[in-house]
Amino acid sequence: MAKPAAGWIPLFKKRFVLFVVVILSVSTVFVCFIRGASAPCDPPRNGLAAAVDRAKLPRHSDVDVGARKNPLGFMRTKLVLLVSHELSLSGGPLLLMELAFLLRTVGSRVVWITYPKSEETNEVTYSLEHKMLNRGVQVISAKGQEVIDTALKADLVILNTAVAGKWLDAVLKERVPQVLPKILWWIHEMRGHYFKLEYVKHLPFVAGAMIDSHTTAEYWKNRTRDRLKIQMPETYVVHLGNSKELMEVAEDSVARRVLREHIRESLGVRSGDLLFAIINSVSRGKGQDLFLHSFHESLKLIQEQKLQVPSMHAVIVGSDMNAQTKFETELRDFVLKRGIQDRVHFVNKTLAVAPYLAAIDVLVQNSQARGECFGRITIEAMAFKLPVLGTSAGGTTEIVVNGSTGFLHPVGKEGVILLAKNMVKLATHVERRLTMGKKGYERVKERFMEHHMAERIALVLKEVLNKSAAHSHS
Ligand SMILES: *[C@@H]1O[C@H](CO)[C@@H](O)[C@H](O)[C@H]1NC(C)=O
Ligand SMILES: *[C@@H]1O[C@H](CO)[C@@H](O)[C@H](O)[C@H]1NC(C)=O
Ligand SMILES: *[C@@H]1O[C@H](CO)[C@@H](O)[C@H](O)[C@H]1NC(C)=O
Ligand SMILES: *[C@@H]1O[C@H](CO)[C@@H](O)[C@H](O)[C@H]1NC(C)=O
Image: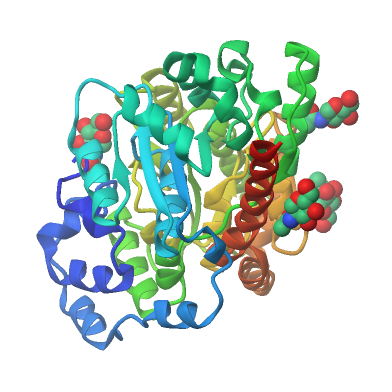
């Protein structure tokens, strides 16, 4: 199950709750759905089936949205070219695809290119392309006359991630200056190796940059100035929002309960146990090693102080034994050496995070160094009324309100004991834990929903269109 099954991706984005319900009554498909789970798939038991029967059909939220005025409505009939650096299930391309669909909903003409396009088409790229074609997004070659003509005609060109900048010189060549005034550059990264002139030398001359958090925007401003001696263009900070599919599961108590029971059973975690999770690709930057140290410290604190708390478990969702062998091995060795293998669970990488969010009690966001650019999993967890224990770095500080929707701890070794203490705090204060979860949910409803993101993006697109129009008339 290392690769997503062919049928899985088209299913993934459909009416999610209905999907959950269908999935739970068809045990073979269920394997695909939670392809990260470590336990073999049992057929649903009677309890599950009964819960499924009671599950209500999904609400048709499209109807409500139709009634509200769509903030992107002014994009109707506009031609938008989207330049993606890859076509995969990673965060950047998926986000651009979400924007493509938002634009299609209001009737924009949307053209997608992937540059560089990898030679092999696999199941993932195949189904993503089909998903786009089904929604009326045109997918064309990133090279050749057609894309050059499209770029010249387009009202707006959106480059996704710094790396996509390579496409400009490679394909547009001497036409680059004509296209620059209508480019919006969407940046989701905060890592050193993106600061190469090869990628971003045209950045100062585009209409605008759109960045996922204030911290990341400031970092880009500093770095381009200090390292590359170039200036950022007009920069807009646009916080992301939760997809409708995710919110549907998060707000469906039956679906949540069914998923919670199933995942806990597959992990061997009882319903009364307290489950802490870190949900990120396993790598040193995401801090799973320090999280395990904190978890171990929290168990020691509980023992030393003879605290009465439920049995504590930790789950790391995002393993990939093929890619990260050394670090993965280090994590597993640590668990064995401390003898906590009954309490620590590893789950393979998966895109379907909702079942895990339904199953856990606390999300830990332990990204190190400069932290997350934004950290979508944080707002996803908050949608599930989970408190978040996060590093006080990067976008996390703009999402988590310390002391209200969770607690922040410093990055690095100095954060280990504080995180452990925060874990103990949430274990001993049930009321506080639940209140923090509710506060997090309220915060999501106030500012991290898809419609919020659409409103914020709409303001940016309006300005960029206006600017490029002014440019072409001058
Ligand atoms: C997890 O991934 C490893 C290697 O990548 C694979 O051997 C193992 O079967 C996977 N486990 C599950 C439950 O899919
Ligand atoms: C940017 O630079 C300023 C000083 O020039 C510094 O105070 C700030 O912390 C830096 N911000 C980031 C995110 O690097
Ligand atoms: C978070 O709040 C706690 C008290 O609730 C405080 O001790 C800690 O210093 C705060 N951390 C940050 C990063 O603001
Ligand atoms: C477009 O730009 C002009 C100035 O160039 C400004 O007067 C006008 O208000 C702008 N319109 C919008 C919708 O931003």
